Length: 328
Image (cartoon, rainbow, N blue to C red):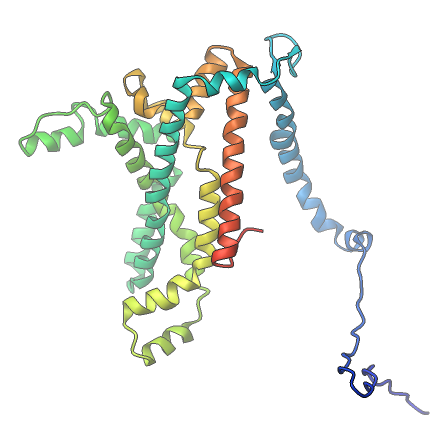
């Protein structure tokens, strides 16, 4: 019995003056029908998430048409008559809207400046802790505020900064006079950003701690052999190792730059702090739901969405060209 051995295909010898030819590797294509038939159990897992996004994310986009149509309560959900850019011109010429827009930009910028780098710093500090029990204790204490509801957080903040609260008691103990933080517009941004940092920084360290575990320990050993101290190891090994995670989260945070926390602002602000506390989302709530001007609110909301989309696309493009890391 003779066994025939088939040799792998090789490239033909090139002629004189011709570049060498590479051997062709056979490609096996799997059609989507075969893939679905083979892994249909896995594909069924995405049915519920797809339905969620279809019903609660994509279908409501059809309602944006009332930004260009006059909506009458009780009439068609897509508006009654076409008015073009009437509502767009209304908010462009409305000075109250631009004041609210400025407040949104200010709160968004402050939140990004403080809540984005602090989880990185906390993750780096926890990564240097050698006591396992102390590390778990710090992680638990820093994670807990994330699981509190916005209502509880707002109630705690208002109790702390009230006239008879803990903060004013400390101020009086140091010889100062009590400050009405809740009614003072100049203090609202400080209160909001501080509470946001307290509530989100601990939870934000989870991804960075997970990214730190993927860094090869041999890189640290090589850095130590080269004479690098702990700071130099952090700068040249740790930070480049978690850079993809940092860039991804930065792009996502920039995409939600305009979506300043509606619930927390609504619970913390009052008419006295409108000059610095009123943001686009709370303004939409008062204009759309309280005043029943849905078309005007839809036009403002569409403008806010366009700004957010522009920011995330720009951040992704800049990141891809500068550091080579992007979401897509």
